[in-house]
Length: 268
Image (cartoon, rainbow, N blue to C red; front, side):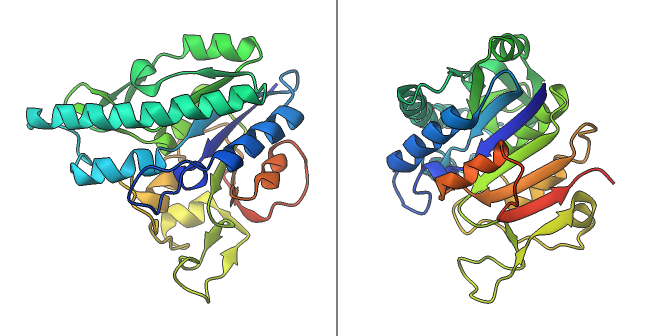
């Protein structure tokens, strides 16, 4: 069976531009209904990761947690505050998905993943494999997690996607954002920005395709870091970016039709 990994960005499920946490309830519900209608556990295995959005990035930036708690033990309560905030977000998303009868299972990131110096060091994968074999959809998310060297540090949803794409030999990964793919400039800022419908991972890593950083508050490195994570995913064939604020676009995961977004070819 094919394994697909879907990252629903924080800008899709939350109003990331606001200064306080706010959920996009109607969009989450519609995404859940579409995934329920089109996903078939007999044909594909689906793993979901969602971003922290306004529930995580704002607090993490306020407390300067980009480099973890390190030699600042006074920051540990702040790190746990961020963890509690994103856990609340995750709990609500799971509630909305389950109300759509989507067969999701929660995998709180801080319980299954450990960092070392801000990068993933270990993932407990056996429970994920069992869930997938049972026809369930595991759900993880960007979080503050234990770090072997730094105490606590940020584990981005993007890094989770990259690591799991290797572990589960995913053929395709999908990123749902608040724009229609990759642009020559930030389309939220520049009216003359042009969408790039097709490119390769090599062009991005080499710098031939220049990527702007996120227009929203982002403590995980933005687009440039996102794609550099995939250079060591041998089974991965394609990365897709699309606008998740248009829920119908999620059908592209299961239907072979043209994508309004950006297709990044990974294999040469």
